[in-house]
Length: 122
Image (cartoon, rainbow, N blue to C red):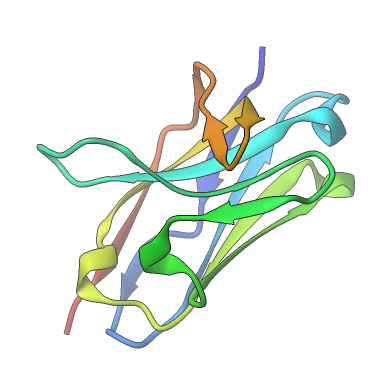
């Protein structure tokens, strides 16, 4: 079982930045592929970014060049650095642990964090 906990959300002005963190349990973290998703109430949960155990990354087109996913295996943590934030980035952001990569796609596992709210507004 993979347990993950997100943090770092908040209220930010358009053009601002936030850095989200997702801490996972277990000594096997170095082998986990991980993903960030976001969801607006009433909408589908969508993949934002994913990172493999060997640091392969992928991004949803709308965040390319603005968001960066990274990992620190010593801390059992992945990050989502979000720059140049836009109002349309407003959502609850969820961490997903232990999925897999299939071609250019990250396939989610059943292990989710509780979510952290990101609000971009003036």
